Structures are given as structure tokens and as C-alpha cells.
Amino acid sequence: MKHVIIGAGAAGISAAKTIRENGQDEIVIISTDDAVYSRCMLHKYIGGCRNVAELSFIPDNFFDENKITWHSNTTVTSVDTANQLVHFNGGVEIYDSLLIAAGAESVLPPIDGLQEAKNVFGLRHLTDAKAIRQNAANANNILIIGAGLVGLDAAYGLLEMGKKPTVVEMSANILPQNMDARAAQTYKAKFEEAGCKFLLENRVVSVQTDASGAVSHINLSTGKQLDCDLLIVAVGVRPSVSFLQDSDIVCERGIIVDSYFATNIKGVYAAGDVTGISESWPDAIRHGEVAALNMCGIPTPYDDALVQKNTVNFFGIPTLSVGKFKLLDGDVEDFREDSECYQKIIIRSGAPVGIILQGDISRSGFWQHIIKNNMNIAQIQKSVWKVSFADSYGIDENGEYKWM
Image (cartoon, rainbow, N blue to C red; front, side):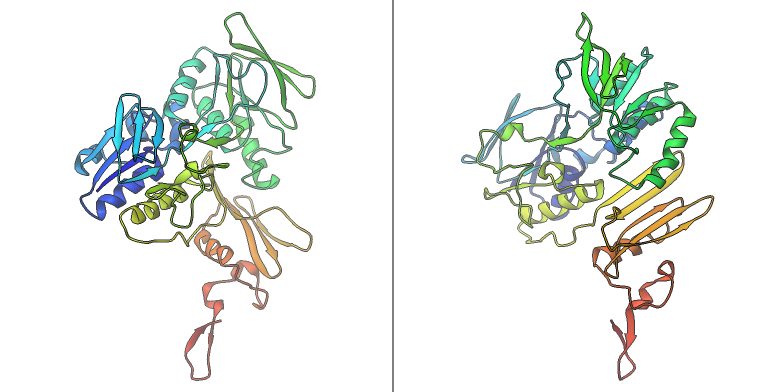
């Protein structure tokens, strides 16, 4: 049996490993990249802390050892599901099962001149990181649109280069999707101390380009104009599905899959960011594993989906947020805070629904389990911060422990 995988990111590589662990079927990977790398580490390349080899999360001999054919630096142009063919620039592969794990692409706002400008980049691929590092070398006015995790990754890498970028963000706080204002302020202060500038509650309304086609200025909603030598856009991503336009595979915001990661076409699966439902690296890895098991004829539903989880670590300060951390009417907040840590939990109808741990992130696995399983702790007569798994056990009439 021949398995073809489109994409060599977390989901695609995870799937290939799982297929190989379950037999000697033929495996082919097709990817636009010519290296396997952790997207989470791209800012380390920008900052010069890691080279390309040090971004990899697989052994050097991974493809040879696992007998995988890898078409690298290759663009898939179409998928013919009727004849089970994947067409790419340079050839065609026939498949018995197909996994689409092509990831996602950076989104550029619909601002005139932005799409064509020479000095505008996202930060999604190694090619982006290389271009940013090269263009930043001689740039004095480096602007970043978006103060989410990707935008701050870019800023952190540039600071490590000795640059002082300016970040424009629509929200009142940085990292608005990752944590609350109090936790975000800790990072904002550290970035500013290192030389980064933030323009919050601002948005880009237009850009001006010079004779070479590069953005020279950006104009903000507050009326301010900023000089620009290099512009990095970090405002979101969209699943990479353009090569499926003429196929019968159903896509909406991403490829539609069932709990087995199967698409509407028999023998075709999708995993990771291309589905639009992956929110983290661990999610993508698990997607790939489950999809691969099903490709190998081992029926495996994806029934262990993680709750929303964000992990951030800048300047040696780790922060983890799990679940929902925005308050609704009736929610109860509980805090712990000292000079080295900040922790907040949100209780809704007696059950924890979200937690933020900054500085001290111990017991994070415990809280993820509690939140994922919507475990009610209202009846436990102790501080919420002292709740443990032992509180969920009782003793029945014959003296045996039981799960309450």
C-alpha cells in the first residue's frame, strides 16, 4: 500500500512516523520546504541563535532510516481524487491513501499596495524567517502588524539581532488571544525594556510605496504616519488549500474532516492546520498520529481533543493559559500573585473553565484535565488552589475507594 503525505510539518512527520511503526507500506512526502523545522523556533533563526539544522525536530537520517521518499522544494498543483493522483511541479504520484497536511499561510490585510510590496513578509515558513533576517540587516524602521504570539516572536528575534522594532496592535493589550491584560503587561514591560515599541489600539489604514515597490510609510487609524524599511504582518493564517480548488474535497474555512480525520473522499485524510481546527503543535502531532492509524486500517477516533491551550515564554518567563479566560456574567475569579508569579482561575457554575499560570506553571497538567472534563469542584471545602485529584475520590459502603 502506498501512502502519500502532503506537508512535512508537525502533522505530516507525525503521520509518517506512525505509518512506519505500523508496517512496511510505501511512504511518500511532498513538501514546499527543503528542510524539516519547528515553526515555533523560527524567531531563533531570525535572532541568529539557531541555524537551519538546529531548527529540525527529526534525526538527520530520518527519511533514509524510515524508507521515506521525500519530494522537497516541491509545490503540489492539484489532486485528482477520481484517479488517486497528486500532481506537482516535476511529476505525479499515485496513492492508495492520501494525507493532506499542508499547513497554513499568513494572511495579509486587504490594504492597497500591501500584497505586491517587496518588503512585506509574514512569519510562517523558514523562507519567511530567512527573508526577514536578510532584509532586517540594513533596516532601521522595522514595523510589525499584530501583537499576538507570531508578532512577538518576530519582535523577539529582531531584538536579538540588535534591532528595535515597532509593533502596531488593534487591541488594548498585547497577546490578546493568549492571556489576560495583567499577564500580558509583564511581557510588554520586558519588550519595552529591551527596546521594542508598541502602538496599541491602532490599525493600519493605508500604506505608501516608493518607486521600487517597497512600503515606505504606513498610516494608522489614529492619524499617525510611520516610516518603514521592513514590514512584518502577523494578523492570522488561512489553511493552505488553493491546490484543491478543482478537486471534490470539501473545504470551508479548512478541509472538512470527521472524527477519524477522513474527508468526504474515501482514502483521503487531512490533519493539522489545514483543517482549521488545530490550535497548537501538540494538536497537530496528535492529528497526524490518528489520521495515520486510520490510513493503516486501524480505526481510531480522535476523542481526546485538548482544551484551548497557549504556551508563551519570552525573557525566561513562562506563561500557560488553558481553557477560557474571558469573564462571563456569574463567573468567579480567584488569584494568587507574588513578585515572581501570577495565577488566575475562572470558575463557572462550580467548575474551572480557564486558568492562567505565569512564572510558576507547575500542576498545569492537572488543571488541563480538570478543565477538559468540566469537573465540578463546588462541593470541595478548601481553597481552589489546594484542590487535588484526591478530592475526586470517596469511600463507598464497603470501604473501597470510588470516583465521585
